[in-house]
Image (spheres, rainbow, N blue to C red):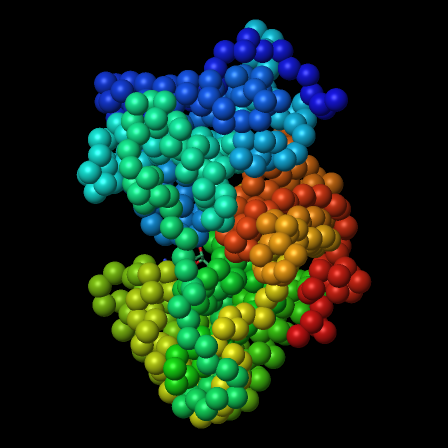
Length: 518
Ligand SMILES: Nc1nc2c(ncn2[C@@H]2O[C@H](COP(=O)(O)OP(=O)(O)OP(=O)(O)O)[C@@H](O)[C@H]2O)c(=O)[nH]1
Ligand SMILES: [Mg+2]
């Protein structure tokens, strides 16, 4: 028995279009018509499991046409890819290739004024400007490209994906069927070319630990919260090893990531931002930063170019380096935010404080000068055998990164003290595979996680009205975890209240935030 009852008029799935890109009325009507044609084909075709038919015919999604700027912003927020893209989908229902993977509940539905039940499937954003450029590039009509993108995005809402080859095939087939039913079929190569590409790291060269290196060692990145330490390591590794947010105190533990060239190896330690601790957890975080600086071969002190003078945190860190006689490189980050030659006074204000090995203005966000910084760090490291195999990218386990990717979405979607009072504890991480011979060939991973918060009121905010907030957090986190693991993920989130957990040794240990975890 389903956990819901629905009364509907059994019409067709609707794609409700929204004009956020100042399209003329005529243009908006034209593209809305394409959307409605796609909805018609999907509603009457065979793209969802039979038992979902009634739901599909009483469902809707919202499609907004947006500018380059808006889609870039959303792409960056949701997928950490700072690029204009053609379309983005934000599903609300847990599905796989048109079949529900979790039973629907009453709160998944909305009631209309007529007493009918409607199922919201999620939201889609499409950039028509990008679509036009792509149509030109692929040499087909703009209508075809727009129809393709709408169909592609709706399929995503229905649980189709192209992360794994097996899934990709199913999605391409569905996509082709829709285009053919609309009279817009074209060659297979075009379909495949239009699917988003995944980054491939497979061309890395294998350099085992123990082989001689001209320069090899540890570089601790320290600085106040929010200066961009994690952004820098993600840029350098080309991977999302550390979560980033515009809110301070994002990183809670030391994260090691490794940068290799054929003659060098830098083991970066991203550390929690140094601040005045107000709980046991925050004290532990600051101690982790200090300890990693003390133990490192070279310290990378990161400062924010927009504050042109060192503050108490920078002075305290410089003092620590002096006491321990450390080699320190100063990176002045966010130089993209400065106008003209305002960098020179900032450099001047720091240069007199310490005998820095070098001072390098950078932008961790755009990558400007990061290559120079890497050269300066490499030169400052001792000659030593390679300490880790070059394939080894980070000391974070998949489980730990998954937990951080969930916390990242809590930071993204909630405000004030809620995100800082939360921890995520992975309680289940089960890999499932049909292939008994290859342990890496997993079909999906089922993850259960507790979101721990400090108060009942916070729990209410995280769950949200009708569970909408936890659903958004879960969907966004699941997509990022799937990208990291390269397979389908089923994510179950539970919100629990543990007051004052940040001062409780047992909880800190359980959530991987105790002193002994180093
Ligand atoms: N404009 C600009 N913003 C940046 C740059 N580097 C990082 N940011 C932004 O600064 C914010 C903080 O970045 P993080 O990398 O999380 O900072 P962090 O130093 O690791 O912060 P904690 O983990 O809290 O210590 C994010 O919104 C980043 O997008 C940069 O070079 N330029
Ligand atoms: Mg950080």
